[in-house]
Length: 411
Ligand SMILES: *Cc1c(COP(=O)(O)O)cnc(C)c1O
Image 1: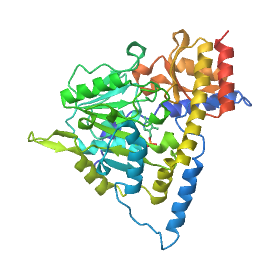
Image 2: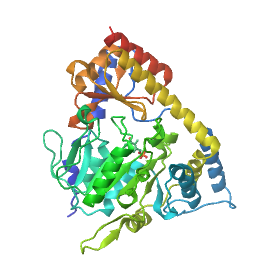
Image 3: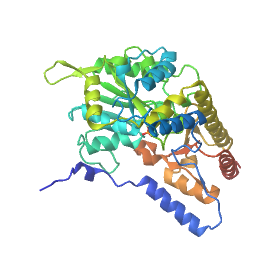
Image 4: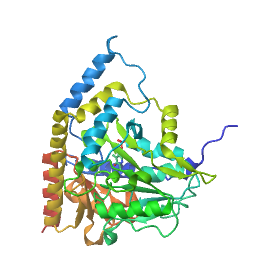
């Protein structure tokens, strides 16, 4: 008799986004003609950089003829793409990587989930709270956790609260942990880690023989100098960290799908026998067996992102989003609302005024400003009392939303 993986039954039904949709639909039905502005989404809205579109087309044309036809590519990605990323994105940070240490993929959601394949179930994981839900739910799916309690915390996972009280940088766990998820610039809080803070985590991981899974999906949005774009800017990180990057938010590839994972050759963990096991060959084996690489035209488009022309276009789009972020941040401040993030990340994390709960604020913002955001409590219990606004909108609607918020709270 076939049996299901019942770990999936431990997952709480996707509640956040269906509930948001339900409340919007209810509002729209009761208020026909009112223009609702959505600042809740975590998806880009601007088109691909023209240089990437051109290379994408050329890639397709190559496949249309016999001369430049490409079949299966290397599972790890084409060397010309890997070399370009190392040269353009890592070397300027003084980070040297070998080609064998980088794996091109169809995105970092997939990679941050699939990476669990190469770790024993016995490891204890630590994740932030609030958090990108993928880290939590994938650990539930593989069976590393027990059931969730009434707060939504799963048995066996170490949750690290990130709130105003610790400036959204978690304290070191008091219990033993083996795998630590860090995401900076952070989704949902929009906050960053300084070099000193990241160094403290690297030192901690090295001391505890733990591995850091570092999600750098938003590194391209960093505007302030001195904030690390890669964990490998920290000495010793190659011995304790895996890094995920994505073209999704950087270059508008959410619907195209391309990302990458770096697993340094120096990264080793203890095996059952006490001998050291290098993780790079395990990930290489995992990808070679379960993945057949990203399509050739997509990799062509990704390489074009790092051409001079492509990178200028990418910067223009990021500047556009970050100008939205500035408008939101300053508008909220004028309305007397405390907010975080939005300087080095496309998310603004606001503290709900007058002690409202996240959902109370959601309802008031919808009813009075016709603006939709994401309740912080949807990202974890410590997100209660916070609210996420995204800067991925269209300028005129962002301005309209902010002016409505100012009119409501700024009086
Ligand atoms: C959007 C996002 C990603 C990117 O995921 P892709 O699968 O590459 O589209 C990764 N991590 C976080 C925290 C994100 O918000």
